[in-house]
Length: 143
Image 1 (cartoon, one colour):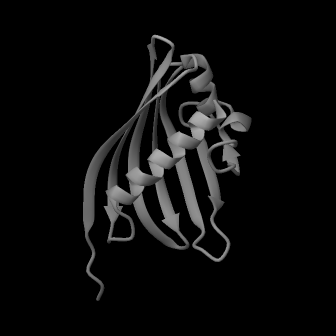
Image 2 (cartoon, rainbow, N blue to C red):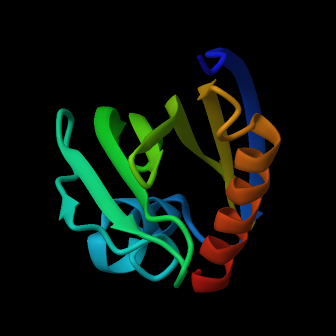
Image 3 (cartoon, one colour):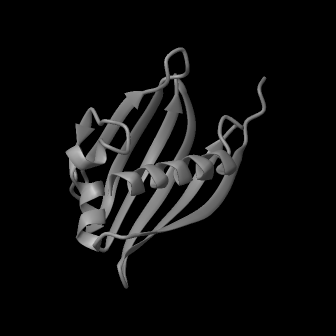
C-alpha cells in the first residue's frame, strides 16, 4: 500500500505593477484578459459561487485540471477562491487563495496568499510557489 500524507503550507508572493488596481483586477476578472497570462478556461463564471475550470498541459506531459470556486469578490480590492489541481487522474492539491490589490504610488501592490494541502508528495509548496512566481511575472508582462 502506498503511504498517504498531506503537507500543509502557506506562502505569500508579492508584486508591484505600474498599473492601476482597476487594470490589475481586470486582468483577473475578465476572461479575455486572464487568458493572456493564465490557462484559457473552459468555464469562467466570475462571481461569488462561480466556477473557473481549465484543463491542459505541455505536449507529452501530464494533463493538469484547475477547478476553482470563487468564495468572495470585492471589486478592485480582493478575490478569494478555493481550488483543486489534478495531474492526469491524480489529485495533487487543494488550496485557498487570496489575491489582494493594494493601491500604491505609481501602481498596484498585488499580494497573493495561498494556503494549500499538498497531497501524497505529488506536488510541493516550493514547486507551487515557483509556479506562482512565474504566473505573476507573466501577468506583469501583459500589463
